[in-house]
Length: 389
Ligand SMILES: Cc1ncc(COP(=O)(O)O)c(C=O)c1O
Image (cartoon, rainbow, N blue to C red):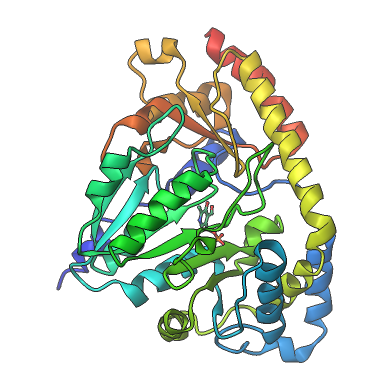
């Protein structure tokens, strides 16, 4: 038999499926995958129930997206960031994941170079390489997870087509500063590249950290493709409704790929998201305050157990350095993560899977705090026993 695409043969099973399955086998508390285990806002489910009564929403939605949702996404960018996006510049996708894939396929030609910051969201390298790109990596080094300016500048060349950028950043919890955004945008412009700005955690920032979309910076409106995710924002990850905001010419190209990928996205879910966007004024402050409480609760639990968590400025993840005792015993993130599941019944993510260039990831574990207070409190006892063992 003829071989399958060798590029596909290099793709591994997602770490999230792996850890969720292992958590199930060991009946562990699952703090690995990024989804809430508690009830999200009822207006989303009520809107889906309402949509289910309209037979027209049982048929294919328009390819670029439901007009009501496109309009409300336009309002979203205007109200939140004072940016104007028309319905010709927004495409509704099957989650941000589809947005990442179609952007990669629409822009990248074989031999183009792309830049990824490690640790990266694991769909970026797969999408980039399936599209034929050569990957250049820039490492965000702990404990503050800033890039090295020299390393960043060196990663760019005349062949750089696309930069994958995630802000607020999973898994480090960084919210990049205006100075960092300026530095990155100037390099993107200098090298005539595009940037895919993954902003699925746009509303999850804490304390004085503020999210600034990179498309707002001078000269970036025409070069930025921004992706967002309703699943993350509205606490219902199963919705799988995302979007891409980009200039009209880029949007045209993206839609050509989207058309022959999924064609269109579930119309009832789109209706629910459009309705949800009408609630952001009251919903978002509550959402931020709820997740801030969870962030602080996990931090307190980790500190109490003797861990030294990194600061989470945004997202619902916290990176935690491996305890010195574990390092002395020769543990890496993967072996310690397995110990945690088997002995302490807590599933986390070993971040080394999000790195290619450096060994930085072997020194940390990623905890997700998008979990009920009850579940987070359970980890208190289990974690203590782990560190004392
Ligand atoms: C950084 C990042 N981008 C994209 C996604 C995928 O979003 P969606 O569920 O809308 O496909 C996730 C999900 O965890 C994520 O963390």
